[in-house]
Image: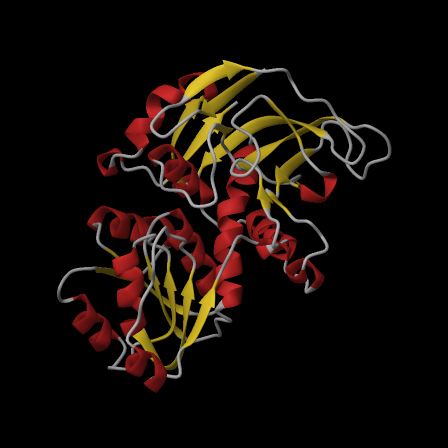
Length: 336
């Protein structure tokens, strides 16, 4: 089979590998669509934590069941999405019902070879029925689920003032689901083109460019209160540090990004707000179910979010160009 291998930073090559086979409890999936995630771009750049080369990347995956071995709740030909976080099932996080932050997490496409390939054998517990949506939507469910999980972590309530910092795919997903929970959502980003996209694609009314006067404008927008819930989706330590100053007194700060580096804050500012600081990692099956309910109802304009695409054969060639902000990529899909 074909597989897109990242042997080291800044290198990608299409290689031939033996195709996997179905095993008991692990159906064989014919991968048909794969989304390109910020994690994949970080892997290519060499800045992804918890990563070792070489690796076949790709974890935003949609496909169909090609074969099963033994009894299965899935049938051959059924369309599925992949929940790429393989949890151990017995660590402290798993025992608490939080497999998304399993102590021994194996993320497909990060810790083990992923789905930029023709075929992938996937544990049955990591497959989700994706009937009733398009194959593009099946592949986009994972990044949307991260946004759904973040909004749930922040416990966004109706009429709360929410700011999402970073208007990339994860930020857009977080904004979509924070608004679905009733939040009054503002987006903040350094890139005017990303903010224009947020206005057009998902209907964000308040999209603020992050410049020297941004905090004053955000203060004016909220009557000086700032935000009940702040979400950072930037992957930028300076932006993450600055986000502490956007939290309203009694508010929450949710770090959706992960970076190689330290995040710092001024304790008196943190303490006087009685800030609730939360991390948000990955997503759970419940979050995927939230996403698929929204997709099946037509509530998410996924056609607008999928801005670029390429075939698996062309992916190695075009991948570096997708890193260039001038390309205008929001969500790229690889057709397999």
